[in-house]
Image (cartoon, rainbow, N blue to C red; front, top):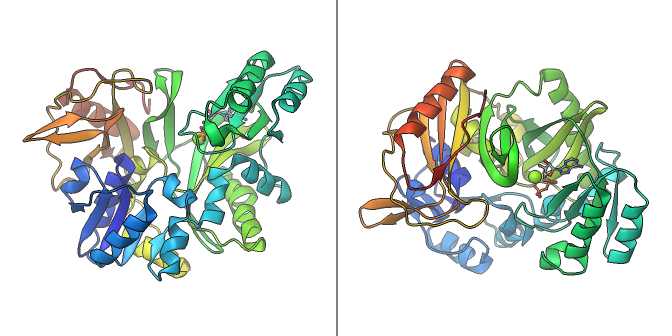
Length: 418
Ligand SMILES: Nc1ncnc2c1ncn2[C@@H]1O[C@H](COP(=O)(O)OP(=O)(O)O)[C@@H](O)[C@H]1O
Ligand SMILES: [Mg+2]
């Protein structure tokens, strides 16, 4: 089978690595991919958001199955376009991806189907938002409803900061159309976790629990990032809580959409707060998380190609997911300055040999090939995943490998998975 993966980050490299283990794989392509995916298959130039060009590439290379990494092409309807052409693709349709791409729609779905989430109101008029926020004596969270690259959420313990955030989105338009509508919601307290599931119609396979780290700094301080590390399995979600999340959140969401005529196929990712009143939804994402994927997929023993193909073909109930009992710890190496401005083009040295190993993975994200050397080319540069019998050992091995790697301005968190 010829498979095409769309995207260029660590998540996509991890997807390619898992697909490359399949005996049924013939040729692997990644568009646009990165120097890591180039070692596993063929990188195709192009932009995953250019749906016409991606369709042409899929035809040209006789692709049997396309796997979409990032959210933007999903929100733009790439799955609908492939389906119209009779081509198989893994991911939700545009209507289903709205669960991530439009937070006010997600809130409406949750309200309609009684799915536990923060109390919220939606505004597209700044004066109305200001009036509402000023009647509140506690803080609120202000969220741009649209896709804002993880920068559109402001947690404001002081309501006057929330008014400023709403003004910047609704009045100044700092996020453009993504911030023309804002969701104002109560601040939830508790531990933040994510639950990922592979969904196909009514069939929902919850993946093993994974924990990620969103803040840049140790002790969960500093700015929010795309993610600085992860581990799996996570102790934060015991079996009882996982079952509760499935019963109270995933099942009613998927069935609620079905009742509205929207069949969900793809990864459904629930960002949750474990509050004293039970798990509540912070947001939904409609694809694999980065860097949760880098800790999860190395532990997946079932052939990922079988799983994805079954989800696309509506036969997911015939597949069973088996997990490696070992623990995986993933450490993200970033460029100094990330998530703000950073320099690129720094020489990367000391990458450990990983060929043939099933206990150490170095996934590329922001890297570039410059002649015979590898240099930095993005904010998050690499993610290093180690597997071992205990989390402590996996952590020690991940950090030992990280210590071998070097590039100017390399930053990473030293407190992960502790
Ligand atoms: N209601 C809330 N209460 C407390 N923290 C929140 C709330 N909503 C979001 N957050 C925090 O803000 C982060 C980003 O919000 P999220 O809804 O996941 O949006 P996005 O990932 O699109 O930026 C979350 O990971 C969480 O840490
Ligand atoms: Mg989020």
